[in-house]
Image (tube, rainbow, N blue to C red; front, side):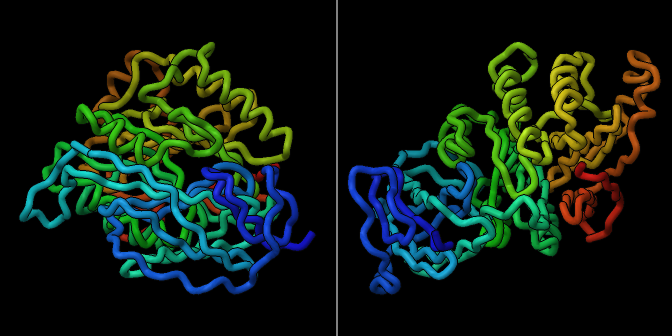
Length: 416
């Protein structure tokens, strides 16, 4: 079997040109066509995206939104195979609106929006996926969606993005040249009249054209009556192999759980999400992968977002200890904190752009309730920024990069 990709539109079960053989459908795939005709441009304007999300090993979704209700061709290159696919579409009358006409950002306007999906399957290990959307402006990009377990990778964690600081944080994230971008939730804030979903996507656009993008839900995705369903769920549903607001995926040497700390039952150790996470971590460790847990609301903090109730913390910590997890990401706190508990690094970074605040605000309350807990915190800084995680040569290297591009915290641990 050679390394050419088997590409198909799984939504409509249409087999595309391939050199790999059977597709599992009722019909055999057609012979490989090396040079299909050039796609004709469609008159449509992309309003959000495009971005690529991992669904499973070697399987990704390319998704974007347009104002126009029309299917769009997308040219795909994987290794030496070129294919032209056509999007499946879903049009929604979106009521969500935010921003104002003369703002420095672009408004979220109500109206009909069409979401486009293409599922690309059978991407060989180590292959580069290139894509070009056949509309005015020809949005194009590339990413490495299926690295081998032995490949070095760079991951960026960003959370709590708010205009205008999110622009500089995203620019520094781009300098990392990450293979994978993780967003920890709170994509935009209704507390700011200029902060919109449209501007968030515009700020992240250079990153989305060069990375894989996976997200988890934050509390500010529930700010408006329809924001959760019409924005977050509509745009980001169906990540990994999950229909829930939590999912897991493998990326080269790591297996990452993106959990739901906001609308799921994560505080219940006997609940569905915790049971699923336990099973997913067990399977990942059995495969020799590095387990990573991520979610929005932190379990450790000395800021105003500390928790007197340790139910969520206990659930996560027991999972981490049981399965040898050495790093847990969360956001929500507008700044950076890192705690080390039983050898597990709890990295709290919600410095993606939202207004920062005092990270010592709850120090006395925490110490009164749980004496000595403040000693678990290794680093704290009231700055905007994001986190870089590199896996290479049998080690994990983690760096916190602030808004000025300075590395203000670094640590590492072996993968074995």
